[in-house]
Every structure is written in C-alpha cells, then in structure tokens.
Length: 321
Image 1 (cartoon, one colour):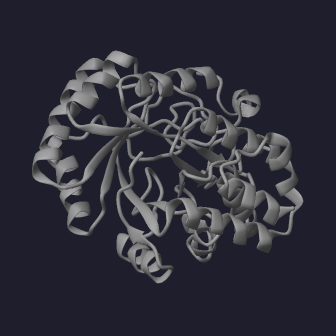
Image 2 (cartoon, helix red, strand yellow):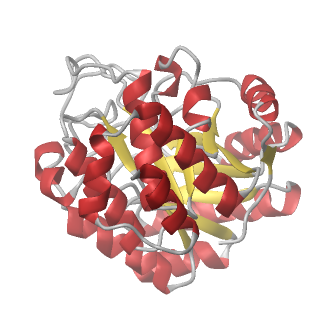
C-alpha cells in the first residue's frame, strides 16, 4: 500500500484524509523511506535553512499553553520591547557571513502596532541594503494593509503557525481562534507574501489532529511548513507533557511529506531534544530547518547544522515558491 501511494503521489495525486489515516500504523521504516523518495522527486537535494531573532520578548497577552512568553504564566524569561535596529542588523550580518540565506524577526504579542511596524521596517531596509539574506518576519495577526507595508520594505515571507488542528485549537489557546490565524495567512497571501505555517507536536493532540493540520496547510497553499516539537516549559500548562520520541517525530515528518509532497518541511523548535538533532527526520522527508537558538530556548549551532546537512547530501539553497 505504501509503495502504491508513493507512486501515485509522484504521479501527481494528493492523498485524502482517509488515506493519510492509514499511515498512522504503517511500518515506520518503509514510511520514512518512501517519504524521503517523495522529497527527492519533488525537491531534489535543496535544503532551506533559516535563523530567527527574538525581536520582542515576553508580556504577550495571549494564553497559548505552551509558550514561555505569555503574560499568563510566570516563566522568568527575559522581557524586553522591540529591539533596536543595530542589534537586529548585527545578527543579520552574523548569519549572512555563515551562509544562512533566510533571517526571521519574530516578535511576541498578538500583533505589532503601527508604530512598531514603522520602526522595524526601517531595520528591514538596512538588512536588505547591507546583507544578502532574505528577510522573513513573524509579527502576529496583522491585517492586509500592514502586510502590504512590510512587503514594500523588503519582507518576502511571513510566518504564522496554525499550531494545531482546528478541532484541538481551543484546547491550546482561548484568546484568539484558528480562524483568526487563517484570516491573517490569507491576508498576507492577498498582498503577495509567501507564508510559512505549521505547528507544534506534543500539545496533547492525536495523530488525526496532526493529519488535519497537515491538510489545513495544504489547503492554504503553504510551501514552508515548520514542525516544532514541544519543549515543555516550567510553569506553563504543558510543563508536564511527555517529550516526543525520535520515532514519533519521524512518523509525523513522513506523514506531512505524504500530504504535502512539494513543500519544504522544516524542523523547528524542540529539535535539540532529539539525540541526533533531527538527522533521522531529514532522512524521513524533512528538508528545511531553523538553525541556531530559538526564541527562549537554546538550539543547534549553524556550524553543526551545516555539517550535518552536507553529510546527508543536501545543498542549502533558495527555492522558488
């Protein structure tokens, strides 16, 4: 069944939810092998690497149960307003010098306000002028006018995770909705921005929830799909959640590849909890990564990631979306 499904996907088929559900109990080694073959057919050896900077930290009004930056939980992280231009630019230069092609500015809060957007647009202009990196941002639930402004100043891709399935979303967050996320994604797309959207695994969701999430990002036409692995943060509601195993993450990645054959599937937060830092997942259909530190947790260095990526036969390059 797996080989037949893989062959049909290579011939252009998009699998149904019922077919995806069959992958939950399929032999893991075969599933990962065929997922990787789908990746090779549609994406070749191209590998998309990005880094992020925590451009504004903490004091977030939203109650996402996994997040150290929510003002609803006492997690004792560093809190600060929007970083100054020089600090953000310095990190952009650092990444540019190490061969990173995408650099994302991520800010806490439901959405940046217009004054903050004006300030960060000036920084984006400097990044575009002084470095070769492509600029991505994660500024929350902006409207179409705000998205149009950041595009004008050089942003090419917007990140906005759906986080989990529509069915499970209200269990994770109550201060905004799944539809709020979808509306923001469609607003970004309406002004010509590419979108990066995926979710976090280990929030108490089922495998069916994960499949529903993969189908939702496919329906939205998303070509960059981050798969985060929950890193349980003390004093958040998910502090005692179990950490996913490498086998579980490989199965999730492979299923996402079967559902989204042409997308770049990106290992993101929590990857440092895996003993091999994601190597098996990169042999199971994943072909993108967030390197360096995450927002409030440490990650894997750019140098280590570059060495692993090259050892697996990948080449860091930009791709056409």
